[in-house]
Amino acid sequence: MVQDNIKLFALNSNRPLAEKIAKHMDVKLSPATVKTFADGEIALTVDESVRGCEVYIIQSISDPVNNSFMELMIMVDALRRASAKEVNVVIPYYGYARADRKTRAREPITAKLLANFLQMVNVDRVLTLDLHANQVQGFFNIPVDHLLAAPLLAHYFYEHDLLNDIVVVSPDHSSVSRARNFAELIGAPIAIIDNRKEIDQNSNQAIIGDVKNKNAIIIDDMIDTANRVVCSADVLKNAGVNKVYAAATHAVFSGNSIQKIDSSRINKVVITDSILLSKDKLIDKLAIVSVANLLSDAIIRIHNNLPVDELFNKNFK
Image 1 (cartoon, one colour):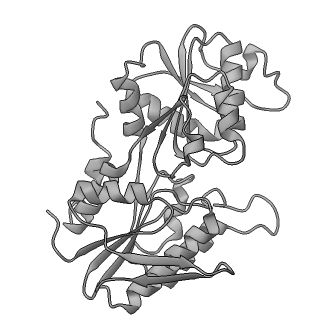
Image 2 (image 1 turned 30 degrees about the horizontal axis):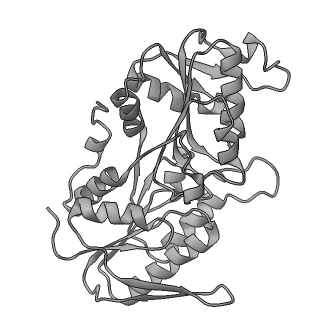
């Protein structure tokens, strides 16, 4: 049940997803006007009263990343000045999450910086999806609900009867935990691409685990340049894998990544709609699973003071 004092706002990064969330919740998106001046400055107006309301802003921090984040910050400030009771941000894709630690001297931790900014403008809660690193939750001193898209991705493979002779593959050693969790979900073994430079990627030594004559799912949280997933597919095919699938929550798809995927040996790439894709990137090899119902169910549970953990325990079937 959703009460009258809840308001949903969509900014410019992924309005189609916001519309799906609003439809599932049976709530209309509240109007707001977002304009950009010739010099790039953002002008924003909230077009209805939010006084005393519980507000949710839906905005992925995706391309153009910095513009999307500034829109979000300005919107939060506008709502605070308009006397909203609560301002919650729904961030399906949390940009800069890869900068979650220092790996060399004099390097920033930008994921922490974004958390500081959001708290500085007095955001009450963050609802997000498949962070690049779980530790990003700890950068906040406010509630963070971190949802997982793995059951939705797994359901696609179940629904299309693609789980026969399957093995879940981690594209490198740093993604093993994610691969193991996905493998446990669908009851499959795992394998690891050993991508060290001294390993010959054309030899069976490049793979830890048994993949020959099996179908493989390469699992990751995002696909950006697509170099890693395409190279992993080549290694797997050279090792005797029958069909290669890839599954990732966030389709960043920078540069010519979509062309790399289209010409690769991957049979199908399963992604979510956490990031809005332009029409020229919607190739036949892509299958898009919506996270709208997952996010809307989480918003409803937060609104009604119900536990969100039940969304993690749903059977993917």
